[in-house]
Length: 328
Image (cartoon, rainbow, N blue to C red; front, side, top):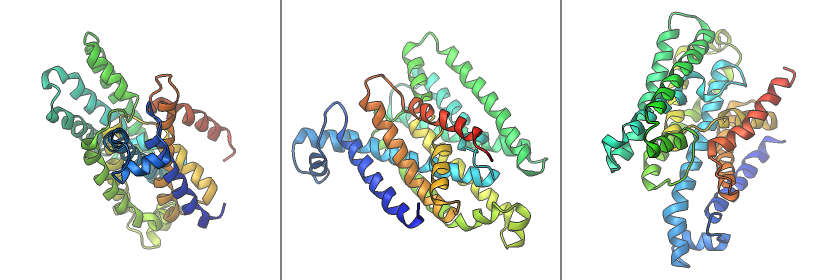
């Protein structure tokens, strides 16, 4: 498909899925009712449902999808491998451990505003701690292979820590249920507080990432080639890791663990519109937002108790296996 068609197509799909996320639910609304509610007109019930409940959920979904899509592009460029994903460096696992630690101490914290803010803060802190640990473990090695292996090992260790905390709360059904629901990812009960927690920082990180598209193209040629073409490879790699960590950490903090978005979306768009990172980055931000909102619509449309992370895994898992079977 021609690249010039990408932006109009993605924007049209984004508007459609965004309006659908505001219209569908237990109370079905027409697109006209949604637009009227957003403008402050129409039925009071529709205004309350759209502006107080569904709009924050949709905005968080947009931001989380864009963050994971962009982070996937960064990791694939960083490792020069289109099968790389945002969780390779232990960011999601570290964020999960931090959040689960707060939830496990929920009975001591109480259900207060401070506790609600403690969850995303602990998740972000855990994500950055995990990334820092990976970098420390890999600093004596050369290339990305040692970094990747360190991330795999730390992911296993952090997963074990999360499982341990989960077993310690086995006697507290409500806390255990909260942890399980959070680990499976979801946008339920997202409020305006969650919007302020994550959306502005995600938008800022995405804005800082966009100018690095050309440098990422040069990095894909190899570190020596990029260095000879004027790219400060060490500085670029540091910027990419920091921004990818910020995006994945914030997404995990406000929506839990949502897998495969950073793998599926950039790969599909790369196949459709080419590998130029100056285009692929904004396309993946839009595509990630569309994909996540569409998966969230599935969780609300089918009364099966599906979680967002389950839906993305059901789509991403077979897609990943298909990628592995394709010729190089």
